[in-house]
Length: 146
Image (cartoon, rainbow, N blue to C red; front, side, top):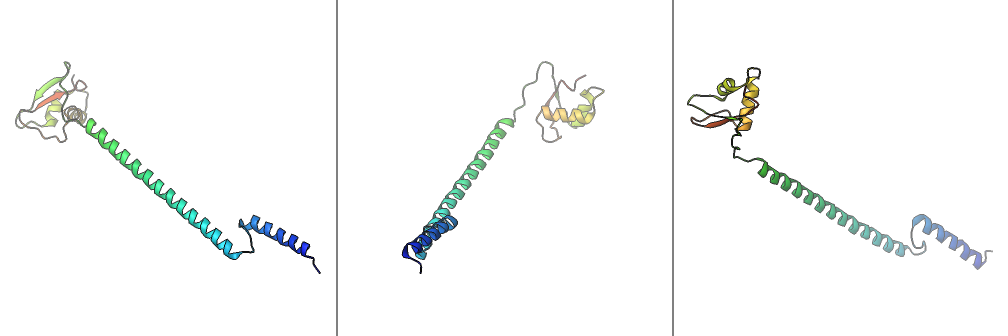
C-alpha cells in the first residue's frame, strides 16, 4: 500500500510537470484552467487589437504625410510664371501661322536636332502644347543658339 506522503510527493511531481508543460496553475482544478486560459486569451486579444489599431493609425498618418508633402512640393515646383530672359537669351514673338517646329528649326544650332530644340523651347517657356498664339513671346534658351 502507498503511504499518504508518497502519494502527495507523486501528486506534487505531477503538478510541477503539468505547470511546466502546460504553463498552467494546477491540473487539479479544471475550472481554474479555464478561467486562467480565458483571461490570457482575452488579454492577448485586447493587446493584439490595440497593436492592430496602432499599426493602422501609423500607416494612415504616414500616407497623409506622404501625399501632403508631395502636394506641397508640387505646388512650389510648378510655377506658371516664366522666368525673365537672361542677357544671353533671345526673345522672339510668334506671328500668325508660325509653328513651334518652324521657330525651333530657324533659331537652333545647325548641329542640333529640331526635336531637341522644340523640347528646349517648350521647357524654357513652360508650354504644355506646341500651339502658339499670334504675338506670343518665346524665350530661346542659350543651349539652342548658335
